[in-house]
Amino acid sequence: MYFIQVLLNGLMLGGVFALVAVGLNLIFGVMKIVNFAQGEFLMIGMFVAFALYSLYPTKSATDIYLLVLPAVILSGIFTLVLYLLLIQHVVGHDDRTQILLTLGLSFFLQGLAQIIFGSSFHAIPGTMHEASLHIGKLTVQEGPLIAFVVAMIATIILSFLLKKTFWGKSIRAVAENRQVSSVLGIHSKIIFASAFAVGGILAALGGALLAPYQYVYPSVGSNYVIIAFLVVVIAGLGNVNGSVFGGLFIGIVESITSGYISIDLSVASIYIIFLLVLWFRPEGLFSKKGRVV
Amino acid sequence: MKRQSYKVIWMVLGWAVFLIVWTVLQSNPSATNSFVLYAIWGYSWNLIANYAGEISLGHSSFAAIGAYTTVILFQKFNIYPIYGWMFGVLAAVLFSLLIGCFSFRLKGPYFSLSTLSFSAVLLSLILHFDTVTGGANGLQISFSSDNWANLEFLNPYVYTIIGAIFVAILIILFYFIPRTKFGYYLQAVKTNSIAAESIGINSFTIKLLILVLSAAFTAIGGILSAFSVGFLDPNYMTGLTLATYMAVVPIIGGSNFIFGPIIGAAILEGITIFTNDLSAQNAGYVNACFGLVLMVIVLFAKKGVLDLLLRIPAFFSKNKILNNTKEVV
Figure 1 (tube, rainbow over the protein chains, first blue to last red):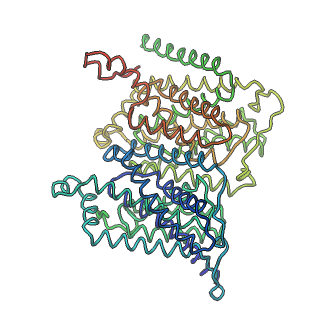
Figure 2: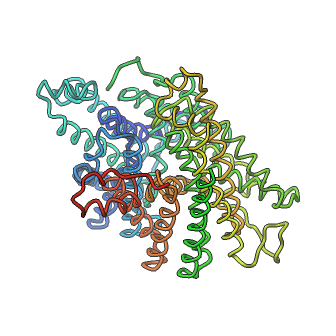
Figure 3: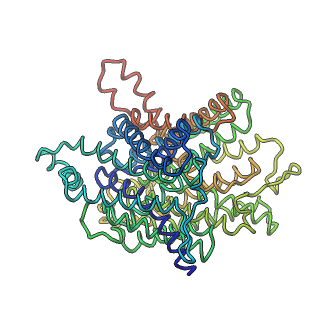
């Protein structure tokens, strides 16, 4: 029974990891950009939700979740602006430039949040922090459950878009070969901007879903971004479906380690798995070689 | 050879003058110390970036291992830091061999991420074995009196002088490495590792050697930092923030220039001082300013501030030949 409980907790945890990692993987796979600011996009989603709540304080839990959509839209606009201002200038540059630019952006956004909201922990008051369902002997917390379900729906929608729509096919084409797809009349600039915005939106959605039941503070993103990177590498570059499974897998690993061994070593266990994957299967666990997006 | 060694002497003297001017203008020992530390770390990190062509984001772990080993040996086993620092450096070197054997198989972002992972694993281990390491509370280094054996000096400028000596050593290293056989090997491996392998250079060993050198100096910086501040904070010492600072110092200054890391360290410390004056309570200003400067440098001056300064005369002159920047050596 305890084991099933641990598994469930891991799944709930993994849902948000998956969401951040899918967005990261989209950006990584299409633009070959290592986006260290992805965690800050999640933080932005959280703070926008928090700010909206502060402007329009609502009472019930359902009303809090109504803030998710405007929070996501605002964050999406914000990431698009960031892309047009900064990121688009380093597409196709060397790794060093991209890593340093996104690291700088990450520091800048964290600092901005600290200046505006202060370094302390904020929370959206309400019942979501404690609310849980009891199924037999199992306890499922409502907040993580909602986050998990929405995350899964969002990734399924994204996967469908990538497979079936013209936009998705264009993204895959550009990821495969930018020059050839440009020759075929695909505007790679638009594709890049939209892919980056969608990646940012997914992270912000994760943040907005976390906001009702978790503390909101400027450095919250750093807990997620590195793990999301590890998920991307474990899943394989540009493998969106793999990222979902990778995220859930990482969540379960972390949960099992903290449930059975020690809560301090839960992070270490993830990294050790990551290093093992890099050692034995650098192309990723779920990747067929040469497949992009 | 003789004329070359004169050049190095001038450079070291230049560093000494720079530091003295900085100290007189600053008159704040802790700011001076952290400036010197940034310079040490910047040079150490630059060894990897410049000679192996890889971006390491786990360099803070070397500083942490060096500092923790030295302090734990002192507090638990009564080994005086004056000997203990060697064990600290040795531990960092062994750790760097582990990282190197693993990470040098990988390229680009994968290398960066794997070095980052090692830092994170190290942080988890430090937090887990809190009976020895003090866990999340860190380790306090108590001061009693002036004591050489314990590396305790009441005059904070002693740490500055020790640090400055190591910076001088690094300047000399940076000057002579490209002029040795080892330096040629490094250059060959960085430019084209496959071609280098084909003429019999073992690129893996070469990269490991430079990583060991880099880790040793980073550890020395970490030990100096621990003893001059008197406190070890695990989250800071193994964190991405410190690792980024180490990387950014040479990048801001200009990683191709011998004086690059010194200028970068001065700018980074300048940002810290400026934002502290702005608002000492809110840490946000430091991060925001730092991020802004980093982005501006990356977008507008890829080769660093020194490169920009050298371009100024060429920019105003009509002679386009001057626009090819020369290395300042």
